[in-house]
Image (cartoon, rainbow, N blue to C red; front, side, top):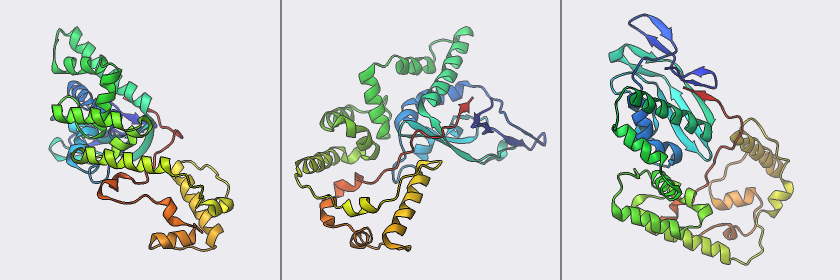
Amino acid sequence: MSILIDDKPVTELQDRQTKSVRTSVFLPLFPLAEWIASNWWFLQSEVERPGAAESRAFDQRHNLRWAREGFVLPSLRFVTLGENVEAQWKPLDIPDAGIRFLGSGHAVLSGTACREILGDLVNAVVSRLDDSGILATTLHDEWAAIQNADVDEQDFCNAAARLGVDPYAIDDELEAEILRVAGRIRPELLRDFLSLATVDELASQATALETASSTIASDTGVIDALDRVRSQAPPLTWDKSSWETGYHFAAELRATLNGRAWKSRSLDDLAGHLSIDQLDACLLPTSDECRLFVIRHQIENHHLAPVSL
């Protein structure tokens, strides 16, 4: 099997035994298909969250290397970014096998295309099992459950996965709590809420979000604290990526407002640099539950890299 992302060989490796470099690995695909099926909802919906993205459990759900089961696979991590998927791979040494994966890289993939390719691989393995007379495996059962899930089941599985919980191994109490929260949070906010909420504080954080939403909705003021900033903002020019666009825009805006580099050590400093009047009108009251209200950046649909297995 060879894995190419944006024409870069993720499976490029050095084989110490044969003293050669090649771009493919030799292994049975059944364990890989099992890993894809077992982590399907996580790969589709779970995002990196503060404090959890570097954990071993998160890596096991998102990194292909955990599917090797005694064979060799590269360190290739797939994580959802909005409608897209971030792929990141890096060198990996497997001394017992005499193998070292050499490549490193990063790409943003179309989420739809990535799911289709992974799904095609699982379908191919299931078909090969059927042709060989190997029926009713756990892979058959799990993949059938995923393929046959109706819209409500899909919504629940995606919601549980966003919380970092296996939707097929969830207790009744948490299942009921997720369903209650889904009924309380506005649909357009639910995905972002679940991406940041924690299982232990799910109910209290939902209450905090409801309170904040109500406060914003009931605010009848007409203060535009950023009016002076907008009037001096430079034209928005798109670069290769959204973060580069934002970085350059911010640099130009700082130069326009102050003519020099500056640092803000407090919110009041920031308001002064940006000529913001009535700063309090821009802020929500803080509480322990409001930790989930953070600025989030999502990569937009620009310059997507192709992936092939």
